[in-house]
Picture 1 (cartoon, rainbow, N blue to C red):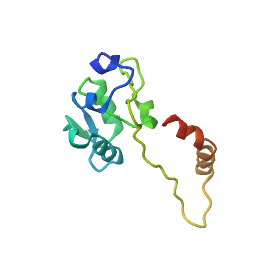
Picture 2: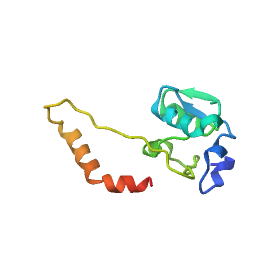
Picture 3: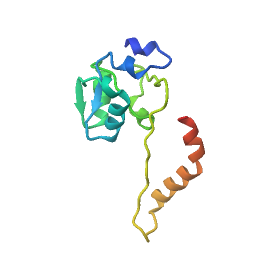
Amino acid sequence: ADHPLATQARVRLRDVARHAVIQLARNSSVRKHLDAAFGADAPPPVFEVEHLATVMGLVRAGLGVAVVPAMTLFHFGGPDLRIVPLAGKALLRPLYLVWRQGRSLPLAAQALYDLLWASRAEIGAAFR
């Protein structure tokens, strides 16, 4: 919460790149999207980790900043952390629900599918 970027209403990726950045592993889809968005300006991470919980712990310890998907923000709650949206065009990635052909989904998966399908316009609008 006391980081220089915490006072901003929105931050640009180039602003993030000026600070110690904590990244997920190179093989993660999040990292691949971020590296593409940063382009040649991709900062070398101060930490490269496998799990979001580790990212959260390192950020909470004040060891750097991280860019994470909106759907993971529940990990980053608390009065000591500040969540600031990125400025500019949203970084989007497709998500898929996959199941075996000819099989029905278990009840919980079907409920998730129904919820996502019913909310698809609302979900998409949140990231435009």
